[in-house]
Image (cartoon, rainbow over the protein chains, first blue to last red):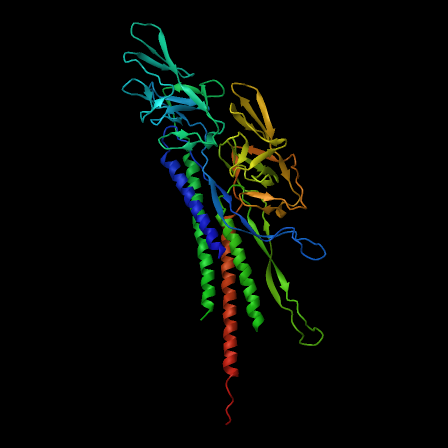
Length: 262
Length: 258
């Protein structure tokens, strides 16, 4: 019976929906996290009687047909790339991007990843790194005796060296933009990598070519909205329940038939 | 006597199909832009030689058969997503898309995205067709704004002026219920239907998607109705076969001479 399989696709889809929501809720306080949304589409239809088929020798055609659908499929879990709220931390190496763009991070294997999580640290060599120790591009080394670290809204990192009254610019953060942020692939640890769907990365500087500006001493919070997630969770749970009822109904009908024979 | 069994069977077969339709609706209760299907039945008169002129004439036999499924084109509720590339349509319009085979399809699912070539596509990868061909973005485009009439404009780089990137091609049909579902949230128009430009009252809402118009309560009620009728018919079939067995048992008793 087709209804059984159809309802099973519905249950699988709602199961995935709950998984996506669970991921969002779990990351409600993750810096730079972008919430996901499951997107569904209907599956193929069996056209038992096609619209416009010949109904008689006189050339009359069927105005409507019989279409039986076969369920639902998950087509994607796009991320919602909206700006998260900025939270003040006061830490001089915490940087938030306001607007479009990503920090470019070089990975140990030589590839690049991208992140919105600007909670940076210094490693043993004085380089600016992420919490996992990956170097933020371009590599900016802060001299040991430097004071007064400042990141301006264009991403220029400057310090005051001992014996000097003026600040020295050490470097400027690269900000990378993509034509389709939603096409980036999430790799965990707040890192994203480019995919064919995201388009080619364009390295630029903060405040130019459409890239956002930087704010020192702030972190971008997760853009998960608790109310939306909970209401989606309720909807998904009910939909799961309804699909299971369809299975029960189909099962009951089959049982009725099998009881006919005695 | 045989006919009662067959008539009952015809009803059970269409009930199974109707459950398939309901199951598909319920499976798509969270699918953006999905439109519910409804089953329609007709009676089928058994064509046979009969004579109606004498009293106690031959009776006609009616079977049930699937007549059609029709699509409920009422609007679904509009959910705010905040994604600048999500559009919901208020009014009877459809977005025009082109699938990988180059065929024109229509959809109400406005959950859009940009592909690697910078073109505006649906989640399934179908190209969204604007009033003058595909809509393509440049990599420096930001602040995508889609107006209520479907005009797409962007800010280029650091620019402060809006640059147009085309406009959505919104179309409408005389009898949208006759469109044919093609899966993946798209519809095809039968050969005798032509797309017309949508009425100016159609409103495009950016940052929102249209939810499925499946009403859970209605579908559950219909499902209960289906299972109950199915069971009822099964009971009738059972009574019929019992009647037949009794008749055989009684008729086969040889009269004993007393």
